[in-house]
Amino acid sequence: MAIGLSQEEAPPVAAEPDPPMRRRRHPLATGIAVALVLVVAGLVGWIALRGYLARQELYAALPAAHGIQSAIVSGDLGSARSSADELQKRAASAASLTGDPIWRAAEIVPWVGPNLAAVRTAAAATEQVSSRVIQPLVRVAATADPRTLALKDGRVDLAPLVAAQPVVARAQAAFHAAAKTLDTVDTSATIHPVGSAVDRLRELFAEATPAVDAVGNSARLLPAMLGADGARNYLLVAQNPAELRATGGLIGSVALIRADHGAISLVAQQAGTSIGPWTEPVAAIPDGPTGLFGQLIGTFIQDVNLTPDFPLAASTASRMWTSTNGGTVDGVITMDPVVLAALLRATGPVAVPSGETLTSDNAVSLLLSEVYRRYPDPAQQDAFFAAAAAAVFQRVAQGGTDGSALVSALAAAASSRRILIWSAHPAEQSILATTSLAGELPVSTGTTAGVGVYFNDSTGAKMDYYLDTSVAAGGAICRADGRPTTRVAVTLTNRAPADAATTLPDYVTGGGRFGIPPGSIQTRVAVYGPSGGLLAAITSGGETKSAISGTDRGRPVSVFTVTLAPGEQRTVDVDFLGMEQTGTGVSVTTTPTLPGTGATPDVGAESAVGSIAVDCASVVK
Image (tube, rainbow, N blue to C red; front, side, top):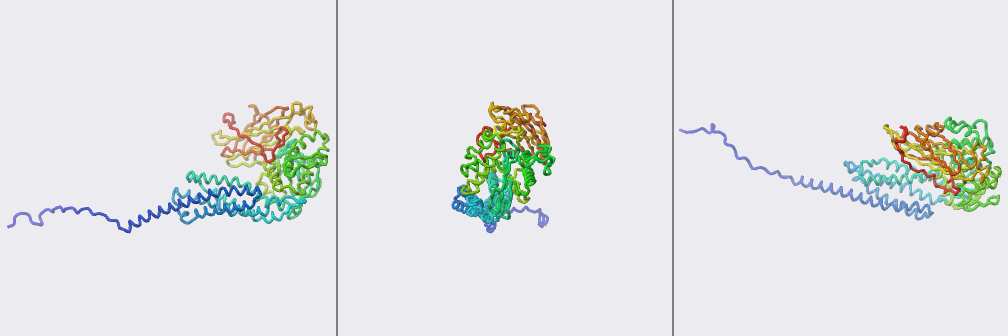
């Protein structure tokens, strides 16, 4: 007999646990992981190496880029071509290093990608400029050297300019396309070294833009304007800054110049006093400038440029000429004795029929001051001015003048707004309108207030030879709504001798004919504010200044009068509220004036504009 529980009834006995099993990696998986790490490391190293090499290539290209401009200016076209080849080689290498599929694929990686894209875009833009802009322009420079474009026997050879037109047009378009591509880079998503490099490249593009556009616009405009497609007639108006007008000076004399297939000739000359006046405006004048400057801008040729809107003034002067003399006028060009002085640096001294010798050193003082002592009769003065201008024109036209010096003199005069050009042909005027040569009203942007300060003589004499002008401007945000305030400070000084009333001719002082004491200077100042803005305040010495206010093409305008005895100085502050701007930047355009000391001003030296800090406590809010 069995004793105890049966097998079925016995409780289960706990089994001993199995020892833990070790997971073993498959050799293939391990190999793949290692390979991936190596591949990633290799790719990172590959990209880093190529980025480093691209950086080196771009840095190595800088000396070549700087060398091109200096070589062209000096006329060493061989060196210019060599530098251009070096620049293209370096830029192409940098673009190749950053443009392969691996680099492009890596641009999708967060954080790293935007930096790689920025470097690639910068390299590509540099390569495009070197191959499609600089190389073609250097080739054109070899066949269109400024020295070969100089007048010879009264004619300019237009063939090089005509041949250069399509090349230069393509180069100009390529430059702006490259600049536009560079602007697409979001530097806020890049590290500082990359972002700062892109910003610097943008600055270089901005610095080069005026030169590229000058070449491009010249190639597009000059052949037709010089009569390649048929004769052209231009009015050359001489402005006298001793009696200021907004665009530079009273129109003292007018010459008709003809350009026919490159041949340039002086057809006729007239004193401004022989044209008009009219009892009614010769052309429709907008209400804005009429309200600010009166009917004179449409009835007297001497006053058409009381308005700073040069296209309006030029078209009105053109109508006055044709109303008096018939014919057609294709454009208007301004100049003044300061421009003549610049041309005389290129031509050398020129003898005037009256016996004087005109030089770059004495042109301004002789034509704007001494002439009034020698010739009290205005008719004699006009004859002297006409003879001087004709003598310089004939010297330039006969040839023999260094073309580079001549072009440099004209470019310097244009940069200081002493040469302005208007074309009666809309297609040409649309190109000119993009340049400072057009003399357009100031232009504002979303961050910058474009303002203008213009001077018109109200003495009725030639005292502005002794007027010193100074302009300063600044901006600040002083309002809760964020709208910026722009302040313009205009300072005028009468530097005439203390005894001017007795030592200067009545023709210079005005002799009190218009109620201004002899020796004093009376000036009407027009200050133009930003587009869409509001005139906020006009003060002088802390007191409100009386003024005429109005608008001109959407710009607020303040016109006030300042009268100064010899030695006196006065400052007037004008405040504008920007309604379309969000920033405090200010860009100022002014009438080109004389230094107020009788010294010959430097052509090309733009009117200096100072900076001022705007005290919000003094701002009208």
